[in-house]
Length: 430
Image 1 (tube, one colour):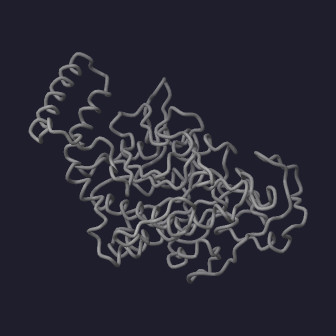
Image 2 (cartoon, rainbow, N blue to C red):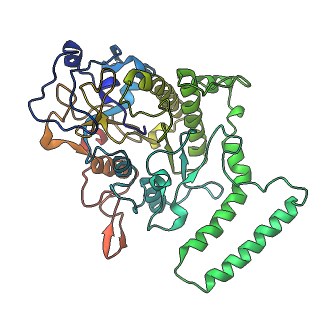
């Protein structure tokens, strides 16, 4: 969730904030914020209610997840290392705050290989309005072989995959297009033979070959119109020809955008794609279309949260009914949280000191693992907070990978997704 989603407004219920709404906030220590000075206590603008057998408290803006809440493993004591969007986003996607390191999807692709000859092993579904902080660095292969970088697909666009098909022209036929690709292949292979050890050209050759295979398989995977109407309705997709209005932020639009990506993700997964990365929110635009709610948390979070919750709940229910949830792992994350105090009168500043992740499926046991303090400001038990490395280690563990052994030697250092840190969160994996 690009921009930093507010844990205290979604699923980390803090009644004390509502009880003391508008009163001075004093956590008992000096607080330095990213963009402001601490304001008054700021109660959640939405009501919380219990859901599921567990009675987990959820805000009204994520109520659709109530139907599957017992399958979710909430980690409310995740701590970050920075309050800067670009660094926090890279930490989530690559395990490092600086560019130049492989993304988690690239590591998984490298470790497990591909299950499909006709689709990439790692696919990225960005926000249709633009990219988040760091852009394509969030799914780069860095020093891993180039074939493991993420492939960007934009569901709902007239051209979901750029340059997959030859341009329309009286001078291009299927035969001439095939002949041109064959010629490129011969030239590239000859060039590569003279430069052993450079994997970039081999990756380029493979991308041409994959593109040719994807001309049929990707078209099929992205054809959500072939889904039964009850499935499209479950994901909140607009009826044929109805469309949605993107001129303002609204719940219907956000549900359509996020739900379509979730449905495409399911179709990709069942066709052998290993890793799908779904994005909500971009790095620019006014009115704001991301989760960075400095000015007005209600304006920004309500449509984004409801759209996300609707699509995510549909994905979980759909995977479960198809028998896919047991071996599909879902991780919900954001770069950091938001403060329990107000910025201005309606917004919240960055909170890297504690925030929430949740996981679902893939052998994960539902429940709550780790708590924040009474304010949602820091972990309740600071000595046993959860790090991004712990979450990454747990994800790899559930994929059958020991995070300490998935290494590549680069610049005389054995690099890995979890750097030199990380512990599997044993409680949620049995």
